[in-house]
Length: 200
View 1 (cartoon, one colour):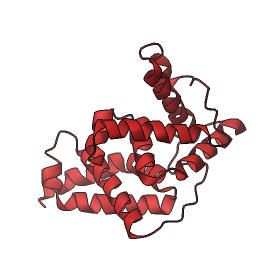
View 2 (cartoon, helix red, strand yellow; view 1 turned 180 degrees about the horizontal axis):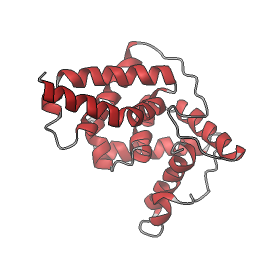
View 3 (cartoon, helix red, strand yellow; view 1 turned 120 degrees about the horizontal axis):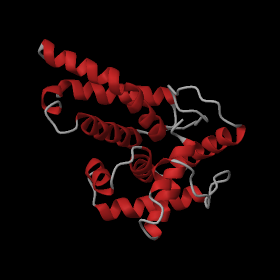
View 4 (tube, one colour; view 1 turned 90 degrees about the vertical axis):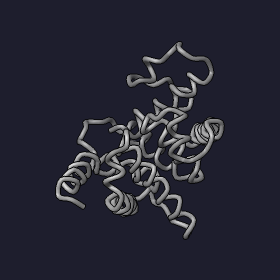
């Protein structure tokens, strides 16, 4: 790799590391697994960086590698997960005990989802990707994304400690009220989970 390309790669890593690790954490449920997964994806990206850097969105490309590496991890062996209430590399915020407890419930609820459903929920509502973008990352149809998102959210709503019916305060979910029907309500609730449970 030429020096200029290598500098750009290191700049990308410095700028995106924390975000990629947070996404990996939601996918794996473990800080150490998340860091290992991110390093694995970035190592693969490094080998193809000249091509990746020319794409419209290098971050989207690396995110796809992250999801693929995580799927490979599950295929190779059963992974035991132990979620904690706080994602890694979080900025400190003054939060009430209720918010911390609900965030812990959200992360524990994510751990109960099958890998595919969890990936859809994380990409759709944490990364805020469109259904088409999630479908592209996962290599499936938008119909599959809709189905998996619906099933995943339904399971999360039944998990103890998660307030299924609460409309989120703040975030994009509130701004989108009234724009869509039932799917809009589903999206608002899910984005509320993202705002309350992960975006801290």
